[in-house]
Image 1 (cartoon, rainbow, N blue to C red):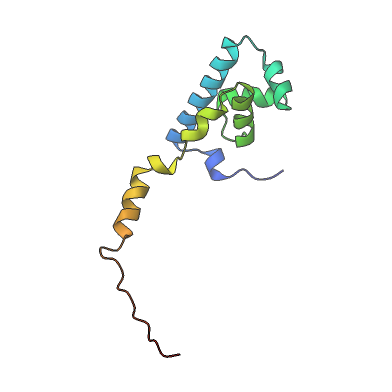
Image 2: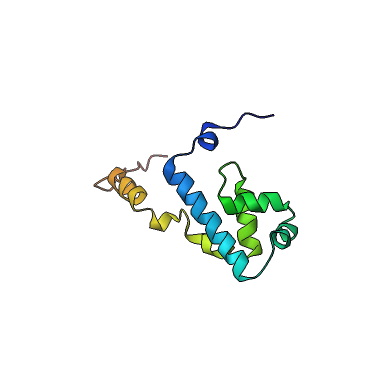
Length: 113
């Protein structure tokens, strides 16, 4: 069996909390629709155990399973804002700091051909 990566074995607290929150949100959406685990699993093409792992926020569960659950529940479009470059304030600030302060000088070309 493949060895689990350290981030799966001992995820940082923030990662663990985010996965658990996502799992709870997926579970709430499923229950509001009055769907069983088996209903979601069948639509996803996965086992009910995988859907249960998604709802628990288990770090070793593939991102495809999380995205599949969101897709089945009709919530995948909400993922559009995740890692949106326009919302990355730190990245934009770093990029702006690397920008030259002046435009490059134009080079004159000789007309000798």
